Length: 290
Image (cartoon, rainbow, N blue to C red; front, side, top):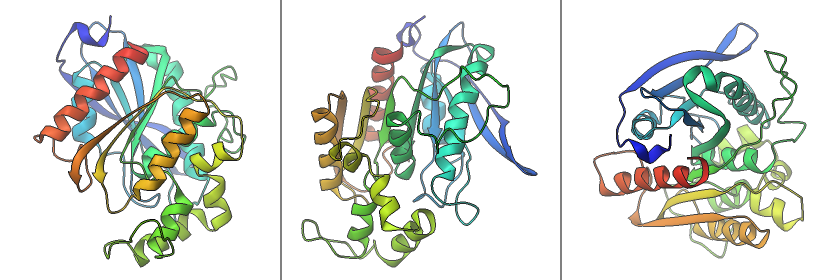
């Protein structure tokens, strides 16, 4: 069955432990369409400048997407001060591998799994899409012992990505001449970068456009990017450079820039922007995984 064969499904929502570090459980919030399926699966990484947020942040958008026939697994993962880069990438990578053997139990398609996120979550989604075999991200062993399960994904959806950690760090510090830093972005943003990345070298190493510019060989899954034409927290030149590098490397990326400023493309589902975003996400998943 394809996504488009039914317009709206009732959605079952439940929290399930997918990972444990010591005595601390980490939960996945599952959004499951109630229908005959089988349905593609999307792993969702929340935003929060790599240090804040939770699996609950994207509830409205995740439920809307599930209503269109997509299983969504929204993950909690380690953030500072508990752990810095690349701990969150290892957790999310584990989450992808956890979803694959469970997808059939959820009425999902085991070999149709993508990843999506907002802001820093979008960055992490893209980084994992490009580097599914990076030894640092694969660091957590699989609970079920399925050594043949990898972390490769079929597609990536980025919502308002903070795509270049080093570029945004310099932006927050007011060190860039190509774009003006607004008053709303400053010391707090710098502090969060320092907590997660620790060093500028790590920020550069984990910046997707810089990865491609350095000539690193990566996977290039089909990607959809949705953002506003101006987002104060996300310098536009960084996104433009990433899109250029991704296409130059041979990757397919569809980009929609919604007119106006602000963030939270999916924050208020009553808006025209949010409705159009959900429609585009559904159509993209139909094309790549339906």
